[in-house]
Length: 352
Image 1: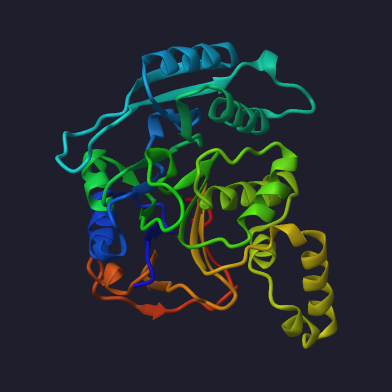
Image 2: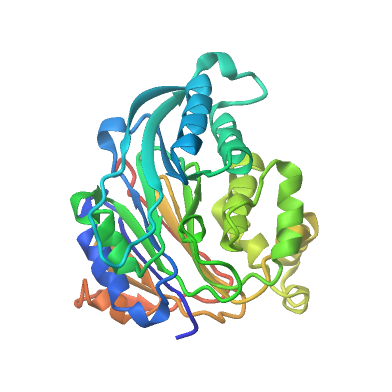
C-alpha cells in the first residue's frame, strides 16, 4: 500500500456532486490510513458567498478565538460567521473550536504594492505564526477544506459532507511516519484557492522550506506537505508560471535525461532547474492540486507512489487505487496511470 490515500472527482461540465461519493471513494482505501488524519476539499460549495474569502479556522480555546476575531475585524469586512456544522462521531474526539468567516479585505488596507490576494495570504501567515492557538486552514473563495484527526470516512461524516455539493472534490487519508498527527497537520493544506493532498515523503523539505520562507511564507503546521502548497502559490501567483512549468520544476527530470533531449527542450528544462533549483521536490510523492476551476495530478519523476486516473464522460477521477474509482463509477471510458513527472491538468469546460 505504501501509506496514505488520495482521491478526487472533477466534473468538467461544472456539475455539482454530493460529498457522499468522495467519502465512499476514500473509504475503500482505509488500510492506507492509521486514523491520525483525514480531510477533504470541495470547490463550488459556497455559491451564496462565492465572492468572499471563506476562512476556516481551528481554535484551541475561546481566548485564541477572541484574539483572532479582533485581528480579522481590523483587516476585513465580515459578511457572515458561524461555527462549522459538525455531527457527533464516536471516532472524532478532542475537537477544537471550528469556525468559518466569509470576508472581504478592507479597501484601506490595500496598496499598489499589495493586492487583495497577497494581503489575504499575508494575513493567513500572520495568524498562523503569531496568534497562539489559532490556525487558518482554508482561505479561498467558493471552496473549503475540512479536516481532522481520524480516518477520512469518519472525518467526512463528522463534517456532514453529504450536505455539500461541489464540482471538484479531493480527499486524503493520512499515515504519518515522521511528523505528528494533529488537526492542523491533516491534509489538505491550502492557501487562497490552492489545496494539496499528498501521498509520500519530501526528503528535500528543509531545503524547500528555507527557500520559500525567504519570500514571506511560514511553515507552521508541522507537516512536510505544507511547503508544497506554498511552492505552487509562489510559482504560479507570484512568479506567473503556469502549472505545467510548475510541475517541471518540482518534479524536474534528472540531468542525465535533460542532456539527451533535443536542443529546445534541453534549454527549457535546464533553465527551470537552474532558476528554481531549491524548489525541486525529492522523495516519493503523488499529489493532487485543487484550484479554482481546475485540478492537477502529479507523480514524482520515478513514479514511486501509485496514482491512477480515469474518465467517464465529462468526469475525471484520480485515486491511489483503481478500486477507489470503480466503487463510485464502475463503467469507465478510460483508465490510465500518469507517467512520472508529467502533470495531468483538468479544467472546467469553457463557459462553465
